[in-house]
Length: 123
Image (cartoon, rainbow, N blue to C red; front, side, top):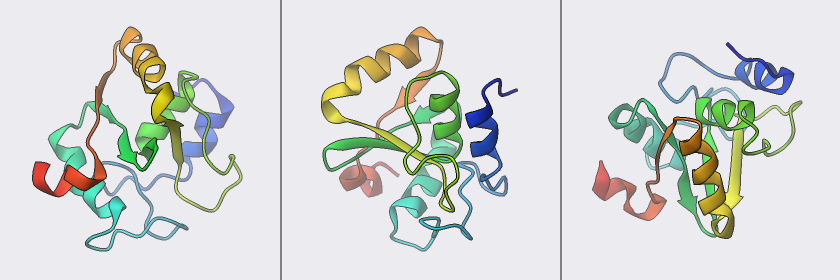
């Protein structure tokens, strides 16, 4: 159960028909083959209990339900604020990754860090 209002607002933008909670009807929600969202859709079932952070350039990003977990426990703020018409997204610069990981693992979560470039070889 979510305690923070911001997390409640983010969960309203999730689509529970897929494991990551990505809503294909929202901006940046495309699940077309070859998109990063599609790759995450393929990858998440292999790590259903882990928070996924994927390296995209100089950032590690999260989508969907993973964002709700990170925002609920005050690790990250969502991209685009809370009144957005796009899927929930959040991230941190590569240089902040260690602190983000420490915050998550100290709260009892496991984290998976696939890179977008290698995701197709991991799957």
